[in-house]
Length: 266
Image (tube, rainbow, N blue to C red; front, top):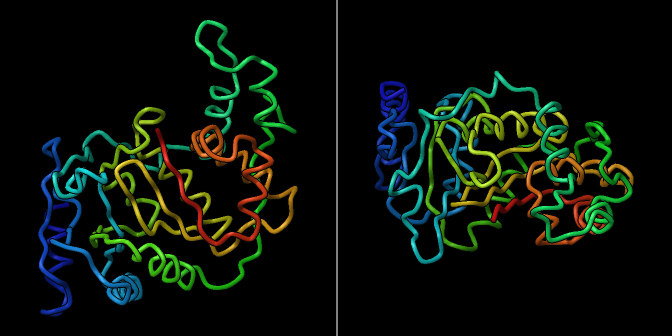
C-alpha cells in the first residue's frame, strides 16, 4: 500500500495539492492516506472527487477533536492493520446482530426499563424490520457529495486522500476507530456504508474523531420508508437516537428527503 499511495500521488500534476504528507499509522501499518497540513477550500474537494476515476484517490474532509485537532488524523491515531476487509461481511447480518444487542434489555445494567427501551424503537420494538428497500435518486451521487463537502467546509477541515475504489472502503483502509465503543472493526462499518451506497447513493465525505458524514443521493421520501432506514441507522449508531431525537419515529421525521446523514458515537 505504501507504493500504491506514493505512486498515485506521484501521478498528480505538480501544484495540484497544497502542502501535506503521508501519515504513519500508530499501529505500524502501511501508510494509507495523505493529509494536507491545513484546511482546504471546497473547490479542491470537488476537483479531487471528479478525478477519482483516473487518480484512484478518494478525497475526505478530515477533522479532529475540538481541543486536540491533531487526533486522530495528523497524529496517525489509526489502526489499518487491525481492520478486516469489507468483503468479509454481510451488511444485513451485521445490522440484524447490532439491532438485537441494542434493543435487548439487561436488567443488571440498563438505565431504561423494558417498556421504555421498546418505546424508543417503536413501532418495531425488539423486532428487526429487515433491510430498507432502495430509494430513487434525486440526482447524481457526486452532485450531493460536492454539495455536502461545501457545507462541511464552512468549518475548517483538512483534505485526506485514500487509495480506494469506493468511498465506503476508506473507513477500513484508513484504520479509523471512531465507533470503537460499539464496533472496533471498521471493515464492518465499511460493509454497511457500501450497502447504503448501493441502495441510497451514499458517499463518505467527511470523518472526524468519532463522527461520520455521508452525502445521500436517494434518501427516503415517505414516513414508512424513513422509519425502516432509521432502524438501520439505530443499529449502526444508536447514539444518533439515544442522544438525539430520542425515538426512532422522531429520527425518521428528520431524515425524510435529507441528502446528508451524520453519525456520532459517544
